[in-house]
Image (tube, one colour):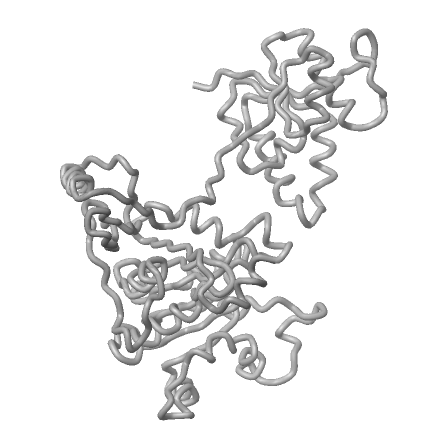
Length: 399
């Protein structure tokens, strides 16, 4: 049950980790509300400012503070919004000694302490840490006990459905990989190594997930050179051309306009406009014995390519869909693409939210899918952490 009575600084309300329901009473200054209103048009903070104002409006534990004065113990300069907020916090604290000032500003903390106002820096747990897998190490007894506990419903390590595990047996110096199906650990099902081979345990997890028809929503995230696109394309192509699980391999991107020019205004047919955006996909569609392999697959509609703006109102059935560079999509665009997927299709989101363009940093659809998808039986997530492309690639990735 929330018990703290707090007075909040503006930046706290702009932080998506702040939860109104965690507190009994929240005092908010009129200056803070004005600052939020001013930030609504800001490209970087506008989304969170609008959300904060909606939260204030809907909350039943918020009290607005209007009055303040600079006298007595409060002798700070009267200019500057921070001092106005501090003055209101001081006036409120004088009436209610249970108040705690919550902020993320060390300067404001020092001034609050000078006035005697209890103050605390806002801290939160980073919920971007879910990678879709865990790594455990122990002797044979440890491993036997782990499997026994899981069989009895005891889940001390908090595994969620479709989460992966690398298990190191120290006695044998042996590594084994598993997927948790919600009840037990199961062995991975990997494609033929002639199709594609995982270079590490993370890539093996990704390959198992990519080939799992029972998990229709897949997220393969990772940084530069981690292999997220090539793995997705190779498995998708195998599912369509060899195993014939799906009729079509579909590659989708959200092309960012160059010089403000929308793709719809570029010259040429739809296919010509899209082709260049799909080169990261087409480079992995190859057959050394047939130089026209990709062209033939496109002609036979085994391969389709599209952009997000052309998907509205479209139903995508019997397809293996790869939504590449999904970090450059907000929640609205992710919903638009995901809601097109029929019962006989699967969709793979590839990308790295850390590389998102500015307009998508503060409302990132890929990150939201990861957060909401954890533990959902329809969703599988693997975050690739290793750059396997080349030493040169790793150098630039670490800049």
